[in-house]
Length: 59
Image (tube, rainbow, N blue to C red):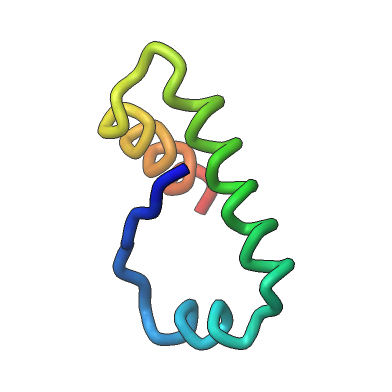
C-alpha cells in the first residue's frame, strides 16, 4: 500500500481531522473501491471526466 496526497477545501479538512481512525480507514477503503472499479481499462482522466459529466447532469 502507498500514500497519495490530494488538496481539499477547509471544510473537508476539518471533517477529516475530526474523524476517528476507523473512519479514516473506511474512507480510504471507499476511495480505493471506487477507483479500482472505475479504472478498469480506463485512465484516471477518463474516470474523472465521466464522474464530472454524471455529477453535472444530476445537478
